[in-house]
Image 1 (cartoon, rainbow, N blue to C red):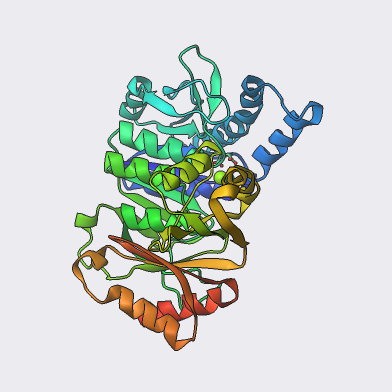
Image 2 (cartoon, rainbow, N blue to C red; image 1 turned 180 degrees about the vertical axis):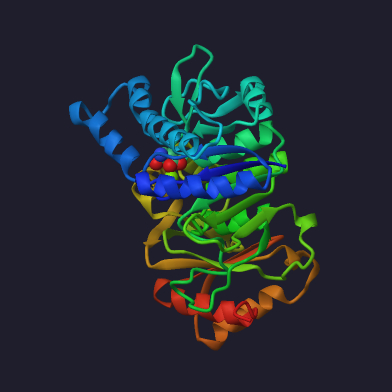
Length: 401
Ligand code: ASP
Ligand code: MG
């Protein structure tokens, strides 16, 4: 079996922790696996390096920034190889370049275009444990690039895909994906298996265990992902294709997003093209619109409500200035929260949404906006009821059982 493991910054936090990682790798190696291990920089190091580059100017040359940032992972990968060799294993560290990771030339947020696995494969055949510096690659001119913050997950998944690995394990300081945030609902349960699509919905709404791009990539390559803790021996959560999950829960999890704001455009002139104009303006300002609700027009006027991330509201206000003549009033509500239920089992069950509405009704929580997709129902409510809503939805679908 070929396993790709990735250890995050906390797991690699200091030499003692790197030794702990080496011990875990040793256990896996004895099960007779081929192992590729992708590592992050020690936690905090990338932030420190970013700080150094900004000492001189707020806009350092991105090529040079990548030269600096890529050094964090060079350190941890080589230290881990030293620890493994010291334990009697054949181990070698590879920079992104040596690992064959080819990217485009967009420094500090490069995308992986291809992986030349020739050298990696020859090392695996010689039974080396190959330790790869995550978060980095090279472009076609051999310039060092980095993949964007948190990007070593992507390195791991991309290598797993290119090598057609049997499994990609992501080790962090959390032990898996939960039915909801355990800080809000203490009876939240760890999910053993979840589909890629459900994970994407949960992650985009705050279950920050994995980068969405990593899950998308794993789905594309059909690589089962496991997220687990490097500090415990608990099983973790497997993210895989829907077909590999025998018992599909109707609802797998409840997500909460408190970082959205709602814009209400009241009395918008109801004419063809108005929505296109407004949302083109938003797109041009790089604003990520989430939910959109338009009510049926009356007397040539309609109402248009939508949500967007709090951090983008100032840009949105500027873009909306052009529409003042088309609208009676524009209101912004920052005190909202979006709660969502997610589950692939919804596709084949009825009454799933009504159960959610009833759960909120029972707590006297008013729903301002609703949107649904095949595997998700989202509701916008008053921010002050967010936690209560999460708990009541969690128990309405028996997720605590
Ligand atoms: N060290 C990089 C960062 O902090 C990459 C990673 O940790 O995934 O963003
Ligand atoms: Mg990290």
